[in-house]
Amino acid sequence: MDKILRLGLPKGSLQESTLKLFRKAGYHITISSRSYYPSFDDNNIEAMLIRAQEMARYVEAGILDCGLTGKDWILEQNADVHEIAELIYAKEGIRPVKWVIAVPNNSRIKTLRDLNGKRIATELVGFTRRYLKSKGIKAEIDFSWGATEVKPPHLADAIVELTETGTSLKANNLRIIETILQSSTRFISNKKSWKDKWKRQKMENISVLLKGALAAEEKVGLKMNVPEKSLKRVMSLLSALHSPTISALSDKKWYAIEVMINEKVVRDIIPKLKMAGASGIVEYKLNKVIP
Image (cartoon, rainbow, N blue to C red):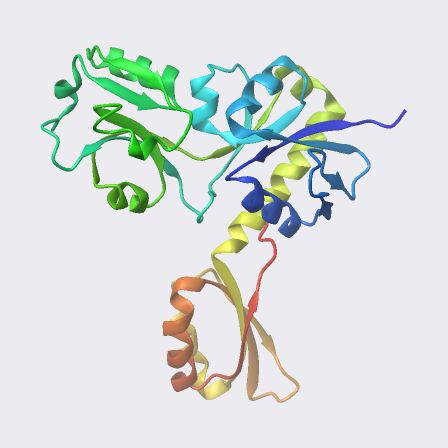
C-alpha cells in the first residue's frame, strides 16, 4: 500500500495565495469548481480544503497529518500541534496580519481600561477573552459571524478584527486602540505524524520548497555583461548584496555578472549599473531560493 500524507489546505481568504505558493514550489494542483479535494501531481499527498479556523483541531486529532493555518487560529483553539515552519504570507501580500481592538472614531473609548463592562464583537472569542482577562479587563465577548466592522456602535461597543492594511477599518470609520496579536501562516503537523520517519521527511521536503518559493517572492535575478574597465564601479554598486557570480567571457576584456536582488531596489540600481558601464542587463523572475 502506498504511503499517504494527509494535507489540509486553507479554504477561504488564504486559499488562492496558498495554492499559488504551492504551485510556485513546484506542485501541480487542480481543483474542480465544487470540490473540497484538490488533486496533486504527487500520488503520496491527499489534500483537503478546510477553513483555517478549524485546521488546527483536525491536525491535533490526527484526522490530518499536517496543514496550513494562522498562528491566531492555533492559539484560539489551544491546539497541541507541532509547528514545522512559519510562512509569512497573507491574502494581500507577504506580511504578517494583526488582530486589533477597534472602536468608532467618535467613541469615548480611548484605552483598554475603557472597555470594562463593554460589549465586544469578534470571531476570535477565546483568545480575546484570555487576553482581556490577563489585562484585568471584564467585558462581554460576543461571537461575530461576519461583517464585524459594521457592528459598532449599535451592536457592540468595540470589535476585535483581523487586518492587514487597516483600510477596511478606516472605511468603516473605526480607529485602532490596541494590537493584541500579530499572526502569520504556520505549517503544522500532528505530533504523532511528526514522529513517523517517512511522513516527517515528506513534510520537511514540502517545507523547504514552500520557504524557497516565499524567499523568491521579493527577489529577482539580474545578469549583465561588464567590461574590465567598469568592473570595479559595477561591483561597488553591488557590494551590499550577497557575493555576485563573476565569470570571464571569451573576450578577455569582458565579464558576466549574475546576482539576486530585492525587487524593490532593482528599478533604482539598473540605471546606475548602466551608467557604470554594464550592458546586456537582464532581469528575471525567481521561482525558488533555497538557502
